[in-house]
Length: 235
Image (cartoon, rainbow, N blue to C red; front, side, top):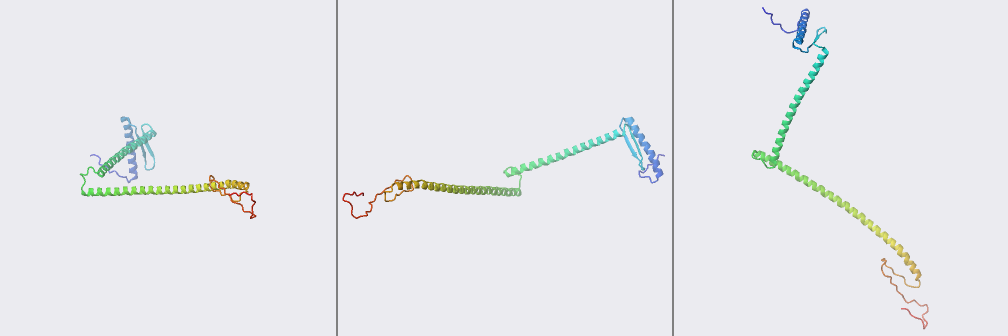
C-alpha cells in the first residue's frame, strides 16, 4: 500500500512538529546541494526554526547569493517599471492623437467644410457657437478702440497743457522784453530832455523804438504885452 496524502497544516504536537522539521530540513538542504552540483546552479537556502535557530546552505557563499538576488530583483523592478512606462506613454499618445483629430474636425466645421455628416441639431449648435464667437470678437474690437480713443484724449490734454505752459512762458518773456525796453529807452529820453530844455513843450515818444519823434514849437508867452519893433516871431 502506498503512503496516504498528508494534509498540509500546522502540527499541533510539538514533538511530532520537531521531528518533521528535522527530516524535511535535512531533505531540503540535501536537494539544494544536489541541484547546485547537478545543474551548476548557484543555490542559497536559509531556514529559521521556531526557536530562532538558523540553518543555511550556499553553493558559493551566502553573501554573494544575497547580493546577486538583490541585483536581479532590482533589474526586474526596472524592467517592470519601464514596461509600464511604455504602456503609459502609448496610451497618452493615443489620447492626444484622438484629441488632435477632434480639434481638426471642429476647425473644419467652423470653416464651413465637411458639414454633410452633421444633422440639424449639430448645425444649430455650430451656428450658435459662431454667433457667440463673433459677439466676443466685436466686443474685444470695441474695447480696443475705446482704449485707443481714451489714450488719444489723454495725449491731447497733455499737449494742450504743454501749449498753455509755452504760451505763459512766451508772455513772460514778452513782458520782460517790454520792461527792459522801457528801462533802456526811458533813460535815453530823460537825458535828451535835459539837453533840450529850451523846448517848452514835452516830447511824445511811442513805445515802438522805430517810430519817428515829432517835435512841435509853440510861440512863447510874453511877459510884457509890448514887443520890440525889431523882434522876430517864430511860428
